[in-house]
Image 1 (cartoon, rainbow, N blue to C red):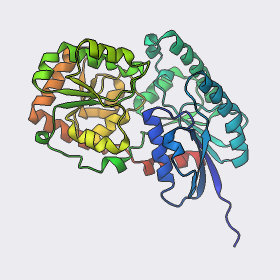
Image 2 (cartoon, one colour):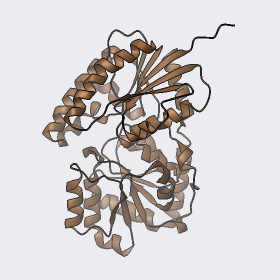
Image 3 (tube, rainbow, N blue to C red):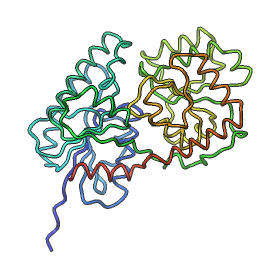
Image 4 (tube, rainbow, N blue to C red):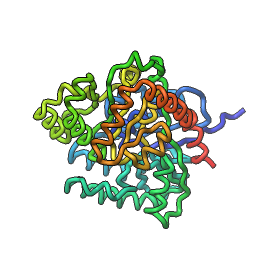
Length: 381
């Protein structure tokens, strides 16, 4: 019997550089290799250690590397990848479907089914750009133009919440693509290493905010809150854990922490490796998430898995993910956030009630295998 020719699918993820996007791509690669499939997946990723340490060809997965460097050189490499490397890979593999995991697909004249996942909130919420510096505003102009080009070339758009679909429909009223709401897959492989249900009495007064720095992540609000109520937090041994790298973007935050002697309240752990997620979440009592915008928010769902109460601003993105499990303060109101945080930190009955709701809310989300199944339906039907 002649061997059935394997069909190819191309997954474009060469700009998966943030903590959330790179981790999701790595989890996807591992899961695709996990069992036999009817397709061969070609995945193009950036040449960063997370991916270069992987086996490049295993099972039904082949990894292709896009050269990456930070700074100006990186933009030239990006142009090469978009307009030379990816078209060449498409020609060589002749995929039946193409999935772009981060916002853009720019190659014209390709008949394959093309699906794009939108993960950049600035593409859908113009209000966010007003707080950016001139250079970043300039970049957003280009990103919006690339996204408009993308919309002319692709067949289907994926967004990660009903809130994002509402924003997309409002901004791109003349879009001809079909659109699906598909939540990010949550990989519990690392999370399951410790129990996700430690009781209130075994937890410390740790408030965690796991996020890299972007202007909309609003770390400034957390620092202002810690400064305003420093005495209370010190007296009750409350610690805010943040997970920032020290670089040009974050130096103003660390300067403020040092100048105001907030080290007793704010502890920077640096970015948390996947292997330590269980340890950090299981010790923490509350997730504080002051971000002004999200296309999803992996940390929110990870906190739900651990039964953590979530204190977040009263914004649609947070309510779309957390539902009744969220505790919502008035936007930009330090006193409102402080009142809700202190109640959930110190009142065991309130904590237990909210924790149960969090665990229930987690059941609404999918794992990586379910996510793959849904995406394959879009790429092949």
